[in-house]
View 1 (tube, rainbow, N blue to C red):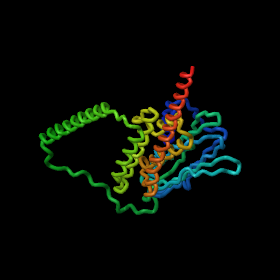
View 2 (tube, helix red, strand yellow; view 1 turned 60 degrees about the horizontal axis):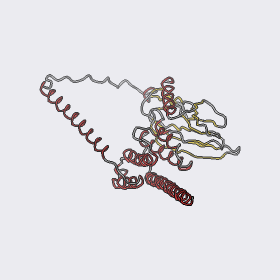
View 3 (cartoon, rainbow, N blue to C red; view 1 turned 90 degrees about the vertical axis):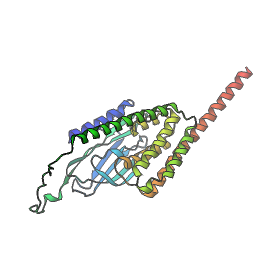
Length: 332
């Protein structure tokens, strides 16, 4: 189990390194990671309270950890993330708390989490947290009378099977459906390649947000589908603005590309936190509160508006610079 966890962590670190040169360390001056659980042995369905605390110097820039899709075989029942506290010694403490559960027995591991940060001299590093072992026990293992538990009955056999022509027809129908799907997919992809939307990126994003709001997916309990579409709208918008191919990128790969753009530290942190919470809904089966769903929609719209204002200011500055340069050339 430990070997598997180590290999999974190594793969995630190597994937992050493909996006740029990254120094992966087990310890670093000025930053420490603390992980803890309230108990290491539970029964099926019991709740575990898992705490992840990052303590670092004030000159270290911390990126929120990608915990949304990296909690092993556990379901997230509740969470509190990014509680920032300034300590008496001047360091900053960022703490996340999770309530986890599982319904299968065995030896589990809460995997080590890669924490990305930037040092005072702008060197990007990744610090790995410690894995946390958890043992999940069965309720039948202690004090339960299993004498009345019977073996599972064997499969029921039927005297007559399906005729051969049934399997032939079913195979032909299945092959036809697969062929029709392939043809439809190719035509759709071809149409998508031929169409080029010449509108401004924020005009496209605002229209997509309005259409998503009309679907009212959260009211139908479709939280995962809602957050998939919401995050894709924001990712596609930033991809159009900064000319980044976002379709085949993971959240971490996309954030690594975005941090190289001049979007500002505050806006980048908001965007990273927005995607991290969305990953909890999409991959960790989290059901968000109604207020949080509304707040995330407003956050997506605010991120788009902030980037739009930045780009408009840059365009105005570029036009002003060109006008000054043209005036100077005419005077000469």
